[in-house]
Length: 441
Ligand SMILES: *[C@@H]1O[C@H](CO)[C@@H](O)[C@H](O)[C@H]1NC(C)=O
Ligand SMILES: *[C@@H]1O[C@H](CO)[C@@H](O)[C@H](O)[C@H]1NC(C)=O
Image (cartoon, rainbow, N blue to C red):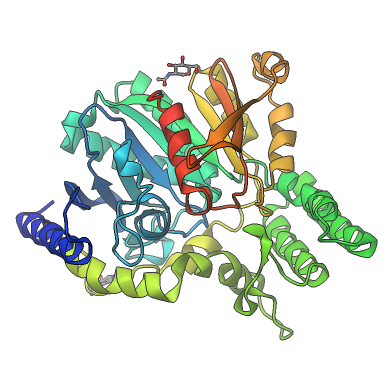
């Protein structure tokens, strides 16, 4: 961080502290601790933004959080809507992950959040580029912040972030072995992750049917639309598969009166639904899946007070301004599975956790179970042979908040009463899970 940026950070901390004292009367714990942020030019004209919150104590691990989309911003949505020290109203978050880890938000792929590219060809078009870009960033980060080289480092992710996390973890494991990156990589956690897109799409019908959200006609319509996606994937026509995925969503929408893809107990707001007028699938899908991560108040916060605080955002860069381009550039890669990467990670001995929200539709738990059962990892029979263990909801002892199962280096957490965004739906349970995965309890 530059010196003016550091000074600005200090001034902001003070401001938050004063605001905190003013609202609560006593500063039991300052809501913001030490922070740092910067850009790394990961390729010519491709600038990636990171933002680090130091943990409250030095013995705690380092967690990198990757948002989905692709095009969703960890520094914005993950930070202020899910796990950061402050919520969208800049009030301290009770379930902030900074209590249990130093948290590193990286706006990736390039073009996401405050990350940006100066060139139209600067966007990533596949997860291989996403991973190699991130490796450049991590190399810089662990060199610049050498104090983190020995700290256990975990990658946590959500949605498409999980697909990127799998690819990044694999490259990181190789880079560490080759001495290219110095860090203590301790594991990866895949939250409601787009690991096997087809398994998700194929289970939408049965999941919605068993939860009273489709009738027999609806089930038939959704299943036949999903079947078309399956054919495209089998023929390796991935761009077409992405277009057809969008069609299945429209069929789901029509037959469920607009069930919310992120939580089946709620309904999609009108602005996310397919309009009668013809609309190309990219703008429809960004409206459905990218804009919800860029709500008006979050955009105003990021492009107002936050960019002012950060002090390093170029004048012509808007938070979220290139998100749609990020998504459209990745459209040909979107429906490709990365199950084989998870297998490689497990075989390499990396600790892998899958966690999934019970009420998530877009990445429903049924679909996750399917690809997990197809893993070639030699520990799978041992994992399958175990029963799960119930976990109490930390805020309601005696009430089950999750189930979990761990065998060797693989763990699965079934998070109850949570949709796609687990930390925003079940904050205390998510924090408890973080502590369990990172060996703090
Ligand atoms: C911002 O402005 C600079 C200088 O005019 C230009 O080179 C760059 O491409 C612009 N970047 C973006 C993201 O628009
Ligand atoms: C990986 O998981 C195993 C099994 O749960 C655990 O014993 C080990 O400590 C974990 N390693 C790290 C680095 O967290």
